[in-house]
Image (cartoon, rainbow, N blue to C red; front, side):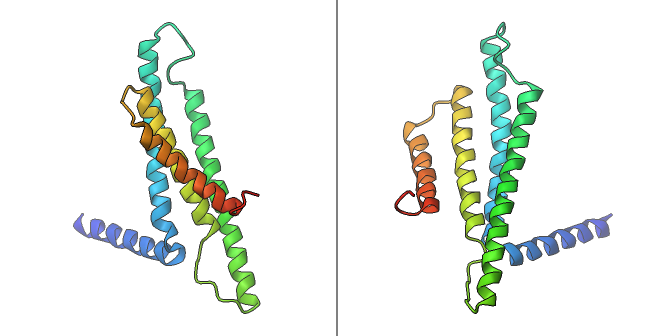
Length: 161
């Protein structure tokens, strides 16, 4: 049993090391995004449950499997968009290498999109906490929104075009 546990640990370490070598800074960002997505889903369910308790006769409130499935599908869409951004990064890196340009950053668009989605998830978690009845400092919501807007402006260019 102990040997199987050590083998699993070694395999997990090898996979993480390989991913880290391939993705660089993007790996911890994707891990943070995964945690934020799970936390958002859980807080969304809890907020819906609290609303259902407060409005027991109103079917518009409460958790439904349909809304839960829609949330999961949306999060899968996030991952597809990050994958598309990573493909753009890959193409840029390989075209640059073909014409003799050296680019050290492995992921620019993928990183930008992933961080944007993290901030989006954080805003949703904050909103869900408020729906659960937790007092939410207004400055926190504003600060996360400002960071998200900064990334938007970076992605569109400084002129906002």
